[in-house]
Image: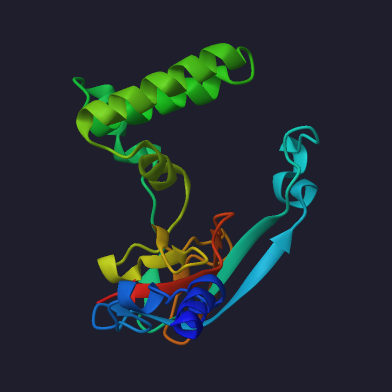
Length: 213
């Protein structure tokens, strides 16, 4: 009995817990290829704080290296990057009242214009913008990206996700974003490649990039 007890204690203390990562992924809907995008490769990039934050680097605050997961994508269908521009709301600006999205964009414009002369006023307006977005059911970060960044949003299947796992295989979080274009390349044709970076949570030890079915 003593030997059995010692063996059981050894298993509890020294053998790794079974990973839950595979159980958390459904390969039937979390794909590596979905007709629009194909995940070709992935690799980790580690940056020093001064490299990542650049002009916003603060030595007393930013002390740890930042890990990014770089997902290499191949486009399988033609896709042009789009964004919401000011002219999308120009008619509403000329003929009030504003729609909820136009009002949110107007608050963003005011915040941006105030940034140079009055950072505190700019911050107040940005907080007002976030509060307003909450009232109308809009994600403030997603909307900000929509109006300021060219992204490939031709279909819901052009959104890329990464699920991150802890040491014992528990899911930490799942992040999703549409591929971002640069101003020199705003249209993709089948076969062309693009790199998409994701910040890796500090406690994550494994990850699974995927595209929706």
